[in-house]
Image (cartoon, rainbow, N blue to C red; front, top):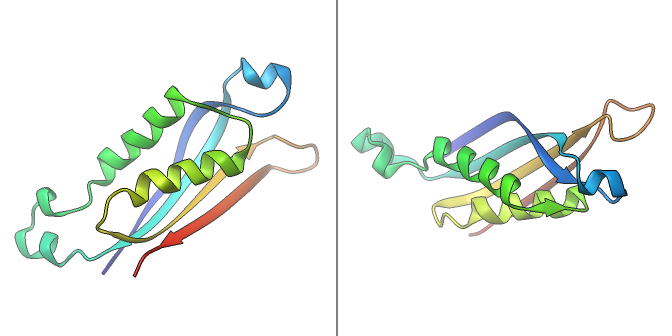
Length: 117
């Protein structure tokens, strides 16, 4: 099994409940961890057998570009769903940070996980 980490995807998204947040993109930081059986990829040494984390990263960015969110929980859950669509992924965790979203804190983050047997 391989544990893949995609660290600190930095992008802007429409996220929040305030009026100005519905029109102004804000910084978000996404961290993804997922596990899959990489034996076929290792044996073939081929991206065709691997979970393509470059394509996954692009899909996450595209998803944020095409949608808007009121809650970090919704953004996190939707990214988690996107990752779990690949049936090779056994477990995944997504953490979404929104820097500067509350006074006196560097950021607020939501972390969610999913898995299959």
